[in-house]
Image (cartoon, rainbow, N blue to C red):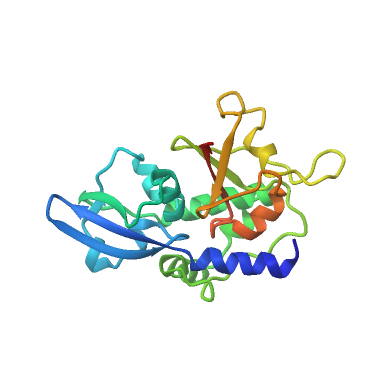
Amino acid sequence: VNQQAMEEAQEEVWLGRVPVCLEVGAQERFYALVPRVSYLWSSLPSALCDGLAPDSSEFSEAQWKSWPVGVLFDVANAKGTLPWRVKVKRGSTSSRSAYFHSLKQAVHLERGTARVALLAPKVDQDRNWRAIQCGDQQLFQDLEAPPTLRHVPVRLIFEAKSYQFPHLAHDEEGSKKVIKDAVFSSKIKHFIPPAVTVIAHGIPLDLDLPLLDAWKALRHPDHFLYLVIRPS
């Protein structure tokens, strides 16, 4: 996969949107088109979402805060029914700190240190957070990629649970590791069904796609590649 294809895929990642219907009680309905790379409660207009929080046991409070909209949608809505209906209640929630914590974890996996993320100027952090809120790739200033990755930052999502392990980009012989190597890794293969479909940004992926290529093309702004696993 060439560099231009990677960049074009990233553009499509940023352009992705999820139509959402927020249901407040039995009568109130609010509709919004939310960027897949954003976080639900931080991307909605303040006039709409101030004082609202999720009212669903489908995800934990931490998952609602820390998983991007597209990941939540792919896990919760396997049939792809639109709009995605989310029950809400009076309350409050925020995802900014969860995003930056996730970014630091990913950068540490990539480089063996989170220093470059920790030292980012606040003005850059504020700009990037605004970019994520509105799904604006042009506003987003990503970290300069290291020449090689120590590990590929991957989060595997299966049955609404997240599994995060260090994944090497290459095996001992130098061959690129592929998605099925991560999905059926020794740490989790005992409870993953033998036949699965792996989803990223709503798209089923070829299990023989190189993991590093998938990360470069389909990673979220927090630098994690989220792979949603469904039984086939």
